[in-house]
Every structure is written in C-alpha cells, then in structure tokens.
Length: 110
Length: 113
Image (cartoon, rainbow over all chains, first blue to last red; front, side, top):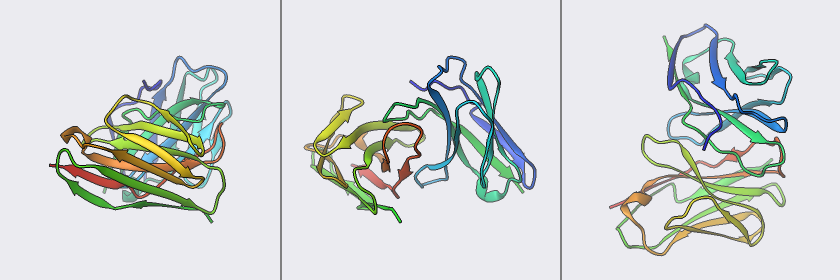
C-alpha cells in the first residue's frame, strides 16, 4: 500500500504557481520523498526527490516540513503542458522498488 | 545516453491466448528492471522487478510471469490471457537501489477481448 495521502484532483491557473500537497505521517528516517508525474498515455516522469532539506531543480521545488510528515511540490509557473497526474511516493533509500499511489490529477486552466 | 524500448506499442489478443511483451534498455549495465501495469482509470501497480539476470521478484499473485534472460532484457509473459489482463504495461529501469530515479518506457497498451 502507498504510504502517502494526496488530494485526488486540483486546479491551477496557467502562469500561477501550482502547490501540490502530500501527507506522509508514518515516514521513517531512511525514507525519501519522491515525486513523479504521468501525462496521459505516457510513462511516468521523475520530477524530484528529497530526504530532509528542501530541493529545487529546473522542473520544480520540493518543500519538506521539519517533522517530515508532509511535503509540497511547487511548479513555479504552471503551463498547460503541466496537466498530469502527480504522484508523491515515500520509499526507503535502501529499497529497490517504489510503490505508486493514486496521485493528484492536476488541471491547468487557461 | 540511455534509452528504453518496449514492443509492441499496442496489442489486441483473445482471451486464452499467450502473451509476450519485451523491454530492452540501452546505454547502461546491470540496471534494475521493473514491470508495471495500469488498468483503465487506475493507478500504477508494480508487477515484477529484477536486480540481475535470472533474479525476479513478484509483487502480486497473478496470471503473469517475468523473465530476464539477458542483462538489459526483461520479458513479461502469460500462457493464457484473461480479460482482467487488459491495461497499459510499462517497463522501467534504474541504477542500483536507493534514491535513484526510475526511467519509464513508452508502454504497451494491451486489450484482451
């Protein structure tokens, strides 16, 4: 079973920041937070991951709370091409596998 | 650079027929390999993963099997397809364990009639 809880869907206006929340209250010390997204009829695409500190790359920023029980993925300037299902995943750093949950369906509105 | 191939892209098969889906990875050695299935309107379900040749871990009991005859080849098979086997099958690879991203192939859309 997935170890995360995400809202099933969200809307965001084009050009605005999209903030996608994720709860992972049972996360353990060895577990990382990963984010992937899946555009319709394609395979998932890795976005970002983190352990304790906030992370930023060319796609997004990941904000992890100090107690690590929740996190937020931020797409700073959402475009229509960001419409996708976003998956928040918690997995042990020593594991060979990750388990996808149901994710959040993000709709970017023109 | 690394690439991952899956074929066929789409497949329509009758109930009771066999299945063989192939996945190959180029540009890397000793990758971890994964098979996922996504039924219509559902999330991604991990079916099998492999950390080396001949090493297969099954995540859910089912009508399917997987094999890894070569380092960069992963095959998903069934002797007799069921209607419930319909879905979008995705192969993925990663390097090693730990916080390493998985790279997904283009997928095979299987319809069992």
